[in-house]
Length: 307
Image 1 (spheres, rainbow, N blue to C red):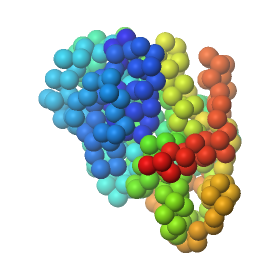
Image 2: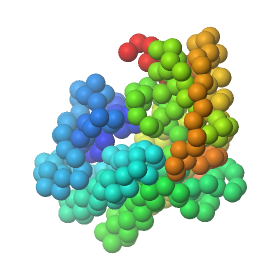
Image 3: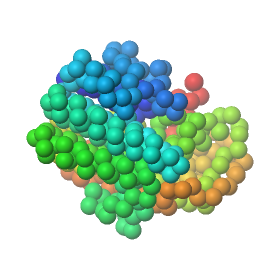
Image 4: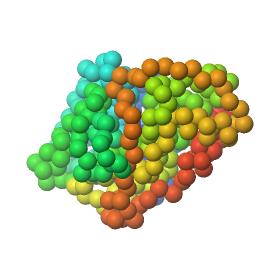
């Protein structure tokens, strides 16, 4: 198949591209290579690459005309909750208007399916755990709002154009290639601090829980939904909540070293607890996470040590 992956040079997108190419698909990457996003070093040499911002309507249209994709995997996004609270206009420009441009081209060229990277942030602060696809949607940040709006626009696009979609609501994804310099990705940020023997900053009380999903497990989900899960929404997580303090302790055990901790207040848009049921995906096509947190952390540490 001919697959276009927006944000395909980024942390998650590049792993997805690698897996699609390994399966024999023809893959094109669209990425603007912004400071905390796509990196040339992540790019698979067998992929065709366009340095294009999804907000650039004309440039994106030219890419679609040249590639004629059958499936679009939409990973490109403004991914930071914190940045969205500081610049909600930027967040909307990328996550909503950028999506409009992608879907407009999909309509024009008859793209068969769009796979959409959504987020657990669409739930805000849930009352019941684990979170499921039926849990109440009350986002508490512009990022969560824009991702939820994207879901609705995508469903409407599929209805109007008689096409298909799959929406994946990610837990906190971590692993090799994650940017350790941005605001997103606590594990990558902590690992860099451990490696450079700097202080580790823990916001709030550190007992806030997240569902940490290894990127390789998420990639398997993206392989499955190329041909399954049409017009459905899935949570993609481990069903286990792990606190930020526990992540510190896991890394301290791996490194056999305990850097000094500095405390900081709660960040705007942050929520205290979330972990996600994967039972719907398991029932639909047998997906379940395979990489334990300790194993995933060791793989991620090894990657950064070798950089």
